Image (cartoon, rainbow over all chains, first blue to last red):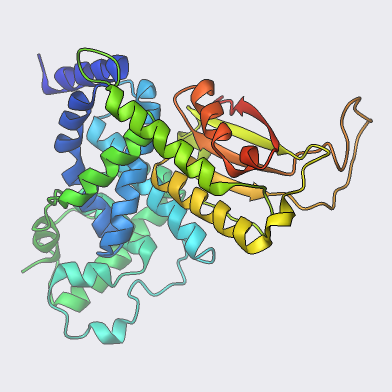
Length: 183
Length: 187
């Protein structure tokens, strides 16, 4: 039995029983990834990341019967986390458009001159740019998936990734990997 | 060092804090989404604890739905419709909660909303203003004022009876208001 099949069986068992022990297995397996994503999306704001993960799990268990196993459960859960983050951002800062190409990728770029840690540089990116980099480069989502999750076009996802990478290079003093494929 | 190596050095998994587990499990138990032991129904202690909690909360909340708008964060309905219910609030003729004082009422509602939200049950709480406009053909039994809903809660619950239990414990019910509970259609 593949890992995917075993996981699907676990999901089915949980749907049938709502058993806390089965849920605990799912929780232990997937929360580190959801937590990591929530932290990256929020720029390291732990309290907000905590709210996001709790809400994501609540929605996930309400809708697990819709999970068909076509995607990985981890991707599905990370998608819900991203939705929750996006929704909270929209509520808190209604003026923030994730596809705003006029934004400087870096919030306060002038203050980033001395930053050498890529995590700090990532946290300093504007939310839309940060989300694209995080979802693409760290969590392995495709541009089509990112476009769907963030409500932006595939072209916007690609251009934001490119601009964000430039900003990160400038902030960290890094360079492109020779022969690295273009996003 | 190049930027791709730097980004790849960031691990997607991060150990979550223990309190996140506690909060998540408490919220899911509170909403009735988890909690059955593998061999049987929910434990009596957990169930009675939840009931006592609800009753104590309701008893402390005494009267009606007044004051301004108190809203819990709304949700993106596209992925969260299943298991959600609207509780439409109505004010019957003898419904007059304002005699306890607005401060008391606002605090009671605020406490209840915060608590329900922390338990993962309450998504939205809205009070409707009195001004209204009716459009379209007249509807028998419908009114543009007194008989119209005065507010609504949107809650998450495993089924309509669980949603009804939430409505029963709400301040509106305790103040003598009436409620209609309906599922939100998921498609």
